[in-house]
Length: 370
Image 1 (cartoon, one colour):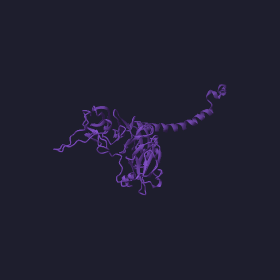
Image 2: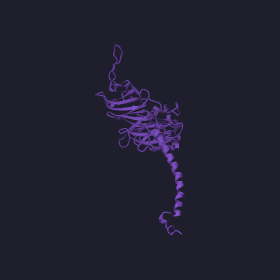
Image 3: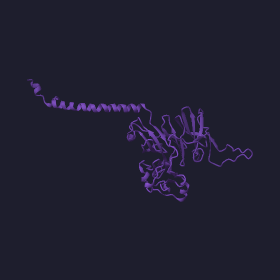
Image 4: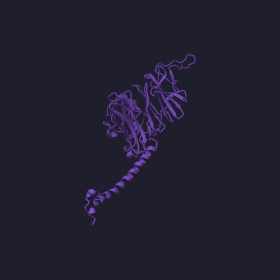
């Protein structure tokens, strides 16, 4: 007998029981690792070869000042992240309607909250933002969000003062700007109101009720389209704030004074227009001493901010896109806020001030929805 083999100890690395244990775990580990590596490879291939997920903002932007003096914009949008892997939408197979908020000074996205994963999608539009809350109307009712975190504070029948009398109709909710209240119609046809900064619905003041009792309805006259655009967002010229010129007494022609043309737009542009304030018809931003132009050339849109005194450009933004502005809103604190599609059919939130213009992608996500 070979005494050398007979006297070997387990420390010599050839213990038969140790070999059997290693072999017992080897195959299960292989069976687990191979599928995981295959899945990782497929995910990597999809994420690196497919276009970004499309996002379609609704035709409404709510802006306002929140707690801490921060100015924000809130809007709703529709998205479908398929075939991208998005862990935040596994339950919706990638499809959802979201509400999101951006800081107007930095363009930073503050939060992004799922409102619905129904298919076909519900309509959703931001109504107002202020204090600690953002208010969004949907085809299912009213959603009140915490404006700092984006968390849902209450919605639909959970809204205090409304409860079971709520109406699941987007057209039953609106924003009364003069009184800074969200107005709504309940099942008894009463007009209620929620002051911005509050979450409780109460009977609306008489003058507010009178303004809205014939406007708030429970019907949906048209199918909600996230692809709709605002009419007359731009024009080749725009009036500036000030007194209206008097028509010539002989000809009746109104002098073309106190008007603005996009003379600072790029020289090689095919067209150059002025962005309009939809609430006044004036050049957007002109109340704060600046204006914004939209110029188009080929597959590119150029947006420039100009000082009204010098009529010179202060900032410029180029957007590869096949279409121009979808929506414009003007915040009295000095922001012109627009939505624009980019070349990948993602919505962009464009924020213009007197000396800057920047774009933030709406609904942008990295791998696995981060």
